[in-house]
Image (cartoon, rainbow, N blue to C red):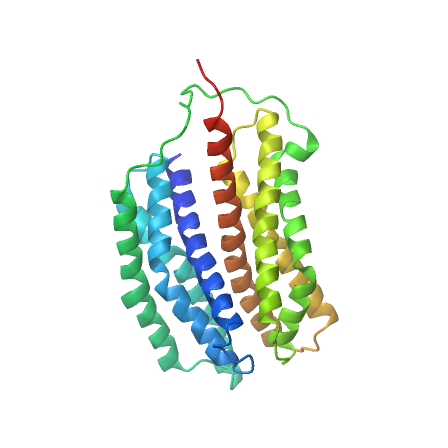
Length: 306
């Protein structure tokens, strides 16, 4: 239970950081501060936004972890600050080694890598600790009802309320809402086309958030009606499974739309796509979990108990 609570807090905090980064970057792009043809500046803007939003990551991780009864706050803060960025940076560094080995001009210079690492260590990590400090200082979130300490028996579930089918169903509608837009985004990244429709992308992002929230809440309601109260990870994974379909679409796009040859190109494509899928998983999982969290608090706040 401790590991589950710890992991939940870390992933929620990381998801909050990605959510804030994507939202602000899209808003800035829509206002015309970013030139679509300058992809390097757009990427730099995203990195800076991600680094600067370390505080929401620490705050959300601390609040959720404390509200779920967690006590190892030091490990919670350290994992929030290092777990996801370390995985992404390691994958990115390996991909860059491949580009260096191929003599590609797309390889990121070593000095730039050191600069990104310094931003992470010197800016993002301290901000995460600051956010966690304020998160742990606030009182734990109170729940409208008392939880029974004796686990209740969960009756046999129907096909669509079982764990795996329920999780896989949760990502179908969200990825369907952005399916067309994925084609243009992949074309912009891998087919060297310029993407101009940031206003439309922002609207699609809002649709994605709303669809993730509504789908996860609906599935959570079905599970509660079936007397299955295990909603934490199911809510996160149901919405986060959108990233699985995102990665499957990338396989189709690579096979049908791109003319890449060689093992290095294959490794680079799916390596960068894997990084995008990680952030997509964190973003959608955060939206799904927080939606269910507020939904459950709301419905149980109106339940009358003797």
